[in-house]
Length: 103
Image (tube, rainbow, N blue to C red):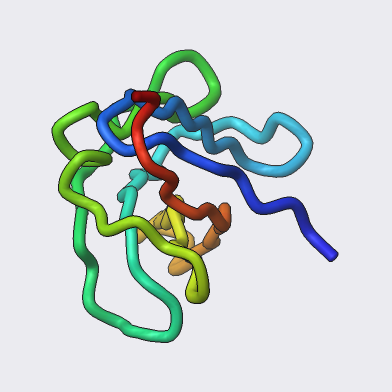
C-alpha cells in the first residue's frame, strides 16, 4: 500500500517531479494537477517550470485552504510530463488527504 500524505489546510505543500533514472528533461514540459478521486475534473492545474533536471513547486497556502477537508476520498496531486517530439506522456501521482489547520 502506498503512502498517503496529510496536508494541513492553509499550509504550503512542496512537490517535485522528475523522469526515471535522471533522464535529460530537454523537450519535456510538466503540468501539475490536483483532483479528487475518482473525478476527472482538475481543481488546481498549472504548468511547472523546470529547475535543473526536475520540476519543483508547491501548493500554496491559498490553494490548500480552498481544498475541502477529506476523510474518505483522497486527493491526487499528479505531475503530467509530456514530450511532444517523442509523443510520450508520463504521470507521477501522489495521494493526500487534507486535515484541519492547526488551531
